[in-house]
Image 1 (cartoon, rainbow, N blue to C red):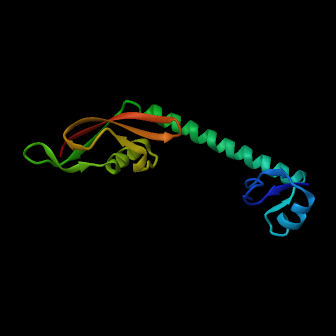
Image 2: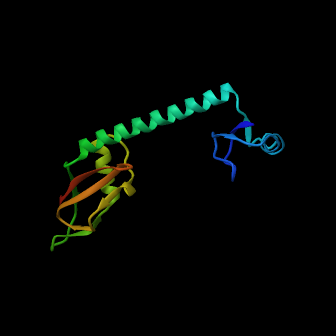
Image 3: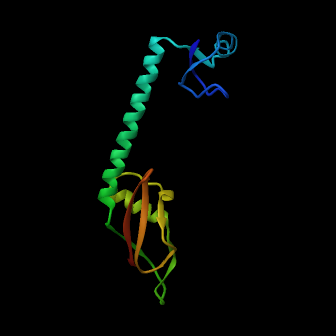
Length: 148
């Protein structure tokens, strides 16, 4: 008996998978507990459409991330901070501040956890940073910290 799983079922398969199960297991366990529905042409077609839509969405996200990486690659982001007499900053420049500036530049919200720094930014100067936009897609850019 072919069924379409409506939830993950341990030992049988994951949600939206079409699996072949014994008639008794399907009729007496999966169907009454609403864990699966019988596979017919309509349900199989629905699942294939969902898979195509998901694949299209992933391709679009990848394409957008690649375009954004090209836009950000090698650019310099300027940040201003206050410092003491010795040129040491009061506090440090955080990845949140960098993420805010990158978001303004890119026009897309970027999470601060996606930005990696070589080390703490506690003095004026230029630092290299990297933002991970998608699996395997990242862009390296520079952060210029100058006096306010």
